[in-house]
Image (cartoon, rainbow, N blue to C red; front, side):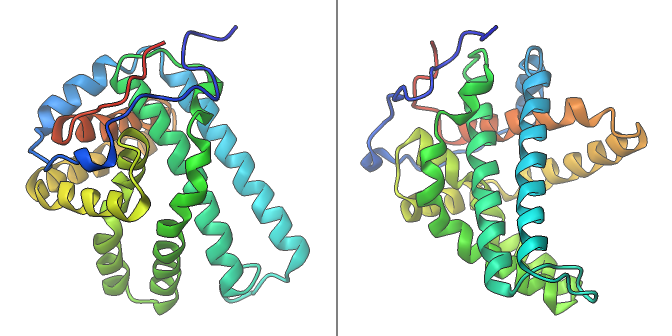
Length: 240
């Protein structure tokens, strides 16, 4: 039975791109409190999303193994361009689903499985951002240096919030990228606290043999949208 949500294909009302507001502050404690309150009714859809992504990545891995031989040194199948292309596609697909999940829950809207795919058409323009960031990530991994990996990770971290601006404000990828960096740079201290919290909770999730991840997955997806809402303000109408 499909719960109330936004049918696939429905257009969500958003503010025009020119109405980009300067990001304000957010408070980690408020984010945690709001996210916890919205977990109810979200967990099974988080599991659906996880299973969907596992299926997508298994399909990509299968095609890679069919087309290319596995490199025994890196355990990768395929040349650099293939790794970047498939990685960027997978990252874009995941970004659209998690952003839809978070925005709907941040607005208190109930979810259906189809709701996760409402904004899937944004995947293709998002590749403008996903391809270069995936390339940087792959090159950093190939460097073998943790210093390089951490440095690249910090530089591209704000990209996490690009889909929120693209979907909620209907912005182009590059304008959304500008907004995402402004959001992170305006809240560096709070993001450090949130990252430490995320690491601690993830460790607890592992210690519970993964059972805790059923709760943590939806929690983090909702928390990302709450951060966006508190710092920028959700403008789209995600109600039924």
